[in-house]
Amino acid sequence: MKLFLPILVLVPLVAADQHYRNEPDPATMTTYYFGLLRRGAAATAEQTQDVERLQKAHLANITRLAESGKLVAAGPLTDGGELRGIFIFQVASLEEAKTLSDTDPAVAAGRLAVEIHPWYAPKGIGSKYAAWRKDNPQAEVKMTTYQLGLLRRGPKWSAEPAGALMEDHLAHIARLAASGKLPAAGPFTDGGELRGVCVFRSGSLDEAKRLADEDPAVRAGQHAVEFHPWFAAEGAMP
Image 1 (cartoon, helix red, strand yellow):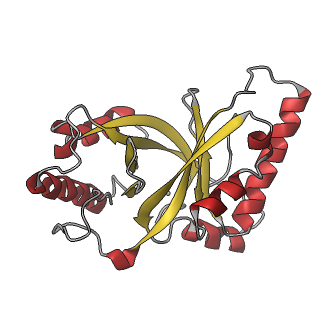
Image 2 (image 1 turned 180 degrees about the vertical axis):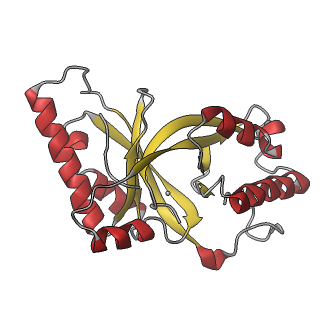
C-alpha cells in the first residue's frame, strides 16, 4: 500500500558527558517520532473496491494530519517489500504519535502496522514544504526519489565504540551534509537494534551505497545500512 504525501546529521548515541567535535549544535536539533509502516496482518495483494476505498481514506487521513501540523513528513518506500512507507510526527510524546498513527484507516484495518521510534534530527523538517503548500494550495506536488538508509547494529557493534571512530564517523557525515548529498540524518534514541536514518539526495542507489560504505563506522562494522527508495515531496527536508 502506497503513501502519496510529501515529506525529512547523524550523531551517535553516547554518554551524556561525552562529546565530539563534529556533533551538531543542540540548538539546531529536536526530537521527532519516526514511524515505519509495515505490511499488516490483513494485507493482501488484491485490488478490490474495498481496498481502493480504504486507500482513499488512508490518504485523506494523511492530509488531515499534515494540515494539523503534527505529521510533518510522510511518503512511500517504493521497492515493494515489507516496509511500505514512513510517518514523521512532530508531537509532544511517543504516546501521542502512536495515537495519531492509529487513526489511519489502513492501520485500523490491519493492512498496515506502525513501529515508532524517537528520532533526533534537524529542526525544520517539513516547514519549507508546509509554507509552500500554504501559498499554493491547488498546485500539484512535485515528488522525487531519495535513497533512505536505515542504520542497524553492524556485525562488530559495540555499545561503547572508540572515540576516534565516532570522530571520524561524524566528520564523514559533516562532509556529506556540506556537499548536499546527505540532506538529513539522525539517530533513534531508544537504544534498539535500529540505530537511525540517513537520507541521500541521489536517485542512484549505487552512489548512495558507495557514500554509506565510505563511512568509517560502516567500514568498521559498527553500523550496517539497509537502503530503500523513498518517494517524497521536493522541498520537504530542511
